[in-house]
Length: 185
Image 1 (spheres, one colour):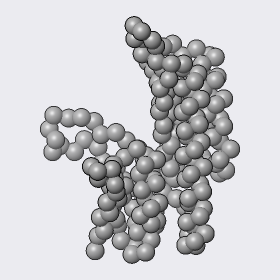
Image 2: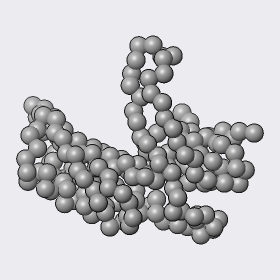
Image 3: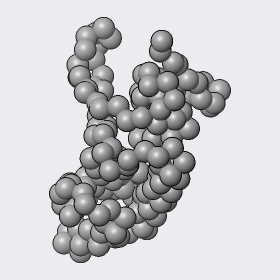
């Protein structure tokens, strides 16, 4: 079900490293039933510092209804892989529990969830120039679920369709660490 794109920075990705990463990330597949073929992007980085080495692993799995993303750094590359997979499993379990509970409470069909695409904006010297455009299907949800989605994507804001008002709303992270909600008329 998952295809793997394993890249290395300052490290050659050997077959044992690739196999280990694929085997560990394969644990995530049990959480998904009918998901089309997806490419898991794995980026391995090793930082050779004079005192000690550190290894960072970043994983992004764009699914049709969710983008899983996590990164971990430790002294050991294999340990970093283990930590990032554990973090992704926690994200999936939390997401599935929350979605199923909300769908039972509200009677939503969770089978038709929208595509959420995570893309990083490229830095540009002209701040008014639009360098990327995104199109999203908005899923009906409440603000609590939208905050969960925003946190899982690692973004500072999230646009969604409010299930109660059927209007478009935005949740965002405030500078004080709390969350705000913008509702449209």
